[in-house]
Image (cartoon, rainbow, N blue to C red; front, side):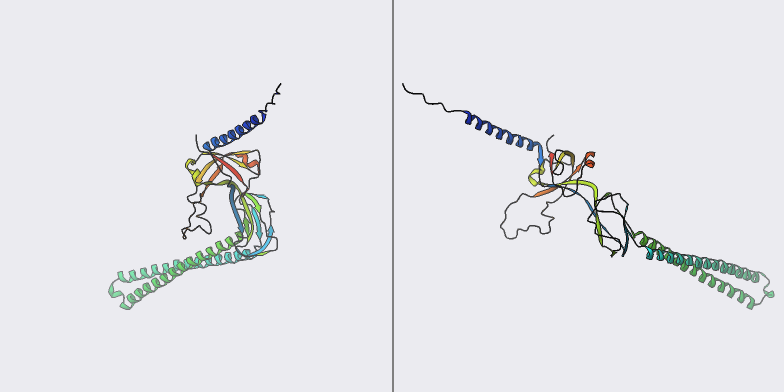
Length: 316
């Protein structure tokens, strides 16, 4: 009797078929999702970085903040020695007081000379109104000369007043400048944010323009570099979701704020040139700005430079 051959098991084929089906389903799901969303991993969080520098030269009196400390807009970060500026204010105030006194004196002189002109005109009219036989030509000529002399003194006094007004304005400008220079000794935070890269210490002598620290603004957004072939479905105001590598398991809501008019390569320090004719087409990337729309970002540390993965809905 002929022995039966053992039947081959179908389990490996079934497992292979299930694995292939699973792979096909994953790829199908990925393709379906990509038809509704535009995604990229070439994206990061951006924000305003303020370089804090002195506007005048001086010695650092106090440094009132530490690295990574949160500061409010207008908070004092560094205090420079302001004694020189305070002396300048005192000098400017003295100059303004002197200019004020001189102008008052010149104004009084105008009133006095105006009274002289009035008196001279009165004398002239009196001599002119009487009987010509009762006055001499010499008296009339003297009265006329007195009027002209009084008017000349009045003109000189008025010119002095104009000069005094100019001097007073200059003194006021000098005082305002001295006060402005004093205000520069208090270096303030331009916006709310966190201190970074602090390099200044009390006692340092700094020059105008010397960078002392940076302030990283609390306002952050996402700059996502999408392929130019993905832009067709991206619209301003479109809803988006953001996954941040530093905050796993949390999805942030956002929206498309703007799209840059130019590729990243155009604004690089060395833009690509094609003068040789050896052209290879490379898909360019366009920066898209996304704004967070939820308040939950305040709960997490989202700092410029962090890697993110945005997904923009391209179909309703």
